[in-house]
Length: 296
Image 1 (cartoon, rainbow, N blue to C red):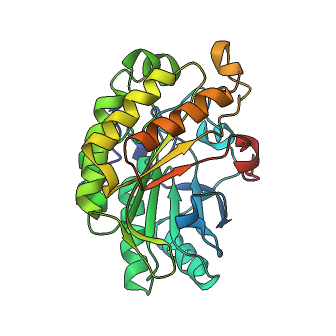
Image 2: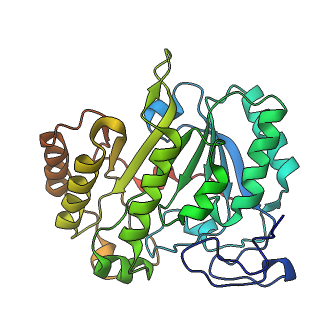
C-alpha cells in the first residue's frame, strides 16, 4: 500500500514533507497521530452532544492555521504533551468512549493523519464500534484525502469559514479556501447522503456545516449562507456560531467580537432563506467556555 506520508500531499498545502523521516510540513506533525485529549464533550450542537456527550478525540496540529483559532494551544502543535497513538490505540480509545456512553465518536482536526485515522475507524468497526463516527474539520480538505474515509464516516462537521479569497488569505494564508471547501463539502454530502435522525433526536448520518461569524465580515457571511442554502438547502444542517472570542494572536478587527446586531441580522437572514435545519448560537456564548483543558 502506498505510504501517503513520505511525500505528504494530504492537504491543500501539498508541502511534500517526508513525514516518515521525521520531517514536518505545514501541519508540523509526524506520521503517527498525536492526540492531546480524549473526553466526553458537551459543547457541540445538540444533535451531536445530546445528554451523554460526544466521545471526542482532539488531534494536535492543523493544515489551515487561522490566526484566530480557539484551539491554538494544540493546533500550532506539537505541544510536547500529546500522546502518539497508532491505529490500534485509537481504535481502543473509540471503543472505551462507546463503553462510557458516548453518543458518537468525534474526531477533531484529524485530516493531516487521515490514512492512520481511517484505518483506526475500520479496526474499531471490526471490533464492535456501532455508534456514529464524525469528522470535525476546517473544511480545507482535498477530495482524494476525504475518499480515504468513504464508507467509514457517518457524520461530517466541516467549517465553511470564508467566501472571500482576500479574507481567507489574510486570516489563514489560503486564497483558495472557498473553492477547496466547496469541493470538500460536496464530497462529504456525497458520502453521507441526506440527514438521518434517530428516534433519540440525535444525528446518525449527514453533514453539519459550521460558520463562525467574524468581526467586520457580515457580507462574507451572507455569501456563505446564500451558497449553502441554494446548493443544499435542508439536506444539511447549517450551524451559525456567534462564539468568536479574540485570541492572543489577534490584531486589528479581530481583536473585537462581532456585534450583537450583526449576529442577529445573520440569523434573520438565514431564516429568510427557508432553512429549517439550522442551529443559531446564542450571542452570549464565548469561545473561552468551549475550549477544553488541553495538555499544553
